Length: 95
Image 1 (cartoon, rainbow, N blue to C red):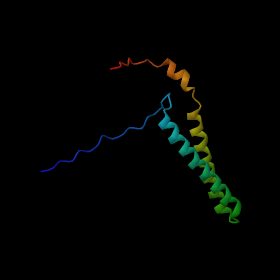
Image 2: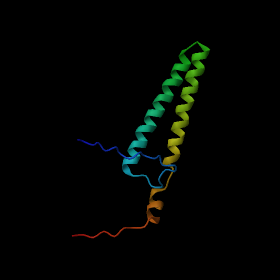
Image 3: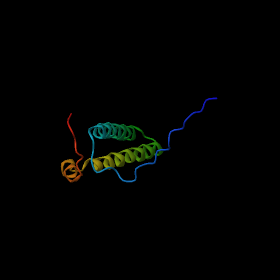
Image 4: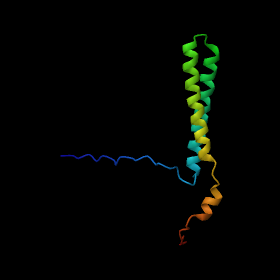
């Protein structure tokens, strides 16, 4: 008889961490790029269509991606050096 282990459910973090790691920064840069690209495409599509309903839908989708982009930018407005200076330091031993 075999048993499978289910991984624990991940709970979303309600508040972003105060420090941004290098890996976090790379993820945020990718996400910013995707959101900006989506916003630009929807804006372009809205300008190209003559159907008012499609134009409204494209504008709405573009505005959503613009909001996401702005929200991601707020997570980058952190002074990492100041936050890192206030974190407790762990003792590192060399062998």
